[in-house]
Length: 220
Ligand code: TIU
Image (tube, rainbow, N blue to C red):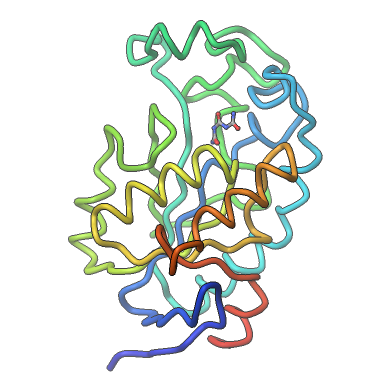
């Protein structure tokens, strides 16, 4: 039996079936949320990105309660950095260098992992990705196909980079995307707000956006 809901969203209601919808939490890693990581090394204030942790946790708890597929992504590279394009390396952030949380954005390091509050539990997918979009050089599409997923709820950081890249990639592959506005953050508030507008403009050119309370109230 399917469980269908309509979530109040922009530009119009988002039809949601819990059995064919996955929650994808993008890069809620210490390197983007805590001081000393990649985000701060790029010159950003990480208090904005870390502020959404409680909102994401509420949605994660609800997704777990409802038995939805949960996917956690982590941006990062092999310890030998052979998957790190020179173009990305030279733009800064100190990828591969030693920081207070280990080597920056390197798989297996403390800073590369997901923050304590949102740690994955058994049965949830952890997806390591070398790029900004979650489909690039990963098996995300295979996982979604195998699990009969048609729609994605998106949370995570940063709104204008990895969240938006993933929404664009998903949209081209035919997935319906609902971005949870207060469960996403950019270092700069304007980048966040502009991204929301870019997603839901022109009749939902890349998808829908909403506040998480609309989702939580509807599927409660
Ligand atoms: N720099 C920035 O805003 N973001 C990233 O580099 N990666 C993610 O968004 N995860």
